[in-house]
Figure 1 (cartoon, rainbow, N blue to C red):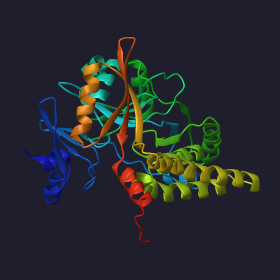
Figure 2 (figure 1 turned 45 degrees about the vertical axis):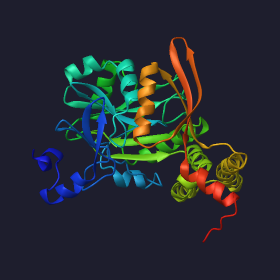
Figure 3 (figure 1 turned 120 degrees about the vertical axis):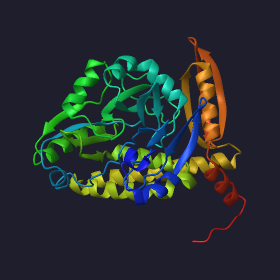
Figure 4 (figure 1 turned 180 degrees about the horizontal axis):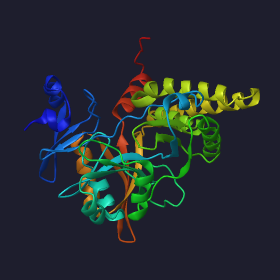
Length: 368
């Protein structure tokens, strides 16, 4: 098999690329997943029976809308909502599978995608494509953000790409496709010339911030160039999440989000009162969740990421087997039946935070 040609990498880089593919198995089917980007190949790229499922590209971020946006785009751009969920790709390999951002086939997301999306009709018409979607809602195994009109969970299709090359579908055509198959899609705020976009996007971001929403993704109309910008609310939520598990996420999350807040405060011309309010909220986002976690460990509680999932009992069992295969410890806290669905609340145990906090509470010293 000519994997260099299949993956679109140089022959000289092939050995290093192939070495970093993890061997995985899903219901007796072997596949390989690239959990980190290598030599221009996106994180999450998967090889299934010598067929490629391309990973989704990393989206750059601008810290200032002006001149960041007009410098990045050389033509008109679309502005859509950036959703706070979990990025998945759905591709048909005889039957549809849902791949996580790291390239793993998730049994729960696969079943939910088959149930929620008209995949048979879509892939009959577009077998070479993959759907890029955000798995959103309060009941998912990965995130738990509330969204209007999402009671449990849903899949929002934000891109349609070639499964092998990753080539995007132009924005307007992609939105037509989503409407044709009745796929939920992100809100489109408008299409702008680059010089007009900063002011327009600034107004959109301020409204999203007031509503506690995440931000925007801007993209050229051909879908090839993407740029993101997030709200202050999202920065604070990210920090609160990270510092609720400070030895798992805190340090990596802190610096870039503080930098984003600083640049946003300057560009949005915060006055003294607004800056003080922003600083106060930022400090609360960091300290309160961290203190709550330390107290929980001190009191003998386990800490980690708490999620609720709803669906077929056997599929939820397969989800937990999937986590077990990734060495993720799951503590089930509630398991009940509602309206024929199994509903399970569970904790993804965070080893680093539990172990480190316990050690420091027991008197272990720290070198700084």
